[in-house]
Image 1 (spheres, each protein chain N blue to C red):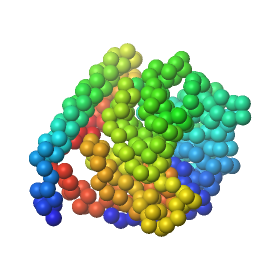
Image 2: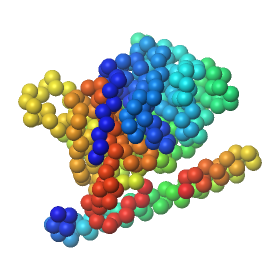
Image 3: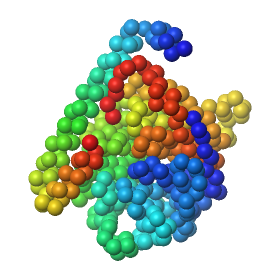
Image 4: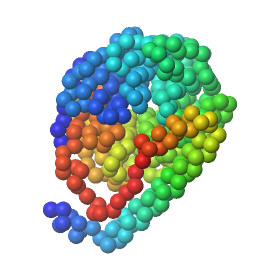
Length: 62
Length: 334
């Protein structure tokens, strides 16, 4: 059933979907890098205590 | 799909929320009561009783320690999740339409309604997590009046000190919590009332629903519209689905203007849309009236919908849902 459906999907559509996913993934990568940078920047400003807290948070997120 | 019907509310649902672990589901209703349920079996764990008006909004912190609620009785209340006791009450001049915890659980933001000579306002309160939670300050850390169209939705944005808002006019905006300055806005994000706003887990993007029959995905930093999901019914809620590139949409018009059952069918379904391709994937039936609120478990293993019909439906996904690859092997990042 799935295979039959897949064969109906045109090559153009497959290419379009691939492009959309690639664009999205590239944007997500940029976002994640920015968030990591932002956290680092904020971590430096904060005192030692909250710095440790930030580290813990990061571990959880990853 | 295994649907569980949660019966206990006497009037329509306004907002539902999972805790971080996804084992508890909180529900707010026009019947003045907040309930908490076990997600797994639908059993009611308890109630949070004390509001004297429609409970418009709730949020639970990431540790499942505190619950906050906002109501038409002009009160915002902080509750102990475990004991059901009200720990603190803040009083306003108008209804509290939306509440949300900050990422680190140390602040709450709420929006109060513009009404009877009172300006709408966004309030930010510091939450004292020491002790039993009863020692809170009545005074906000910050408060401001958003300019222009009335704000109906608010949440902490992608960076500390920034609040994202949804407005009656269809606008979404970013405010500096300290100065109250509107730092970014998209006046034409929607063409009608923004009815729901839910952020991604890292808060870098969010989804909104609107009475204009569309839901949209926005980048938080720029408020740029990334994706649009166009349906044929006014939408009340939109939720992101962790683990799958889907958004879940719910809404529907009350039966008044609709005459035939065949037309009515389909209006009250939860719609699954592909987040990236902007295509509808499927629908789940169940409610007898408009869907007012949708939430997806942070673990991505189930979702729940709350209806105008007074029911909450929890749907646990089957194994086939996790295996299914309707679009082949493309891997979409969260």
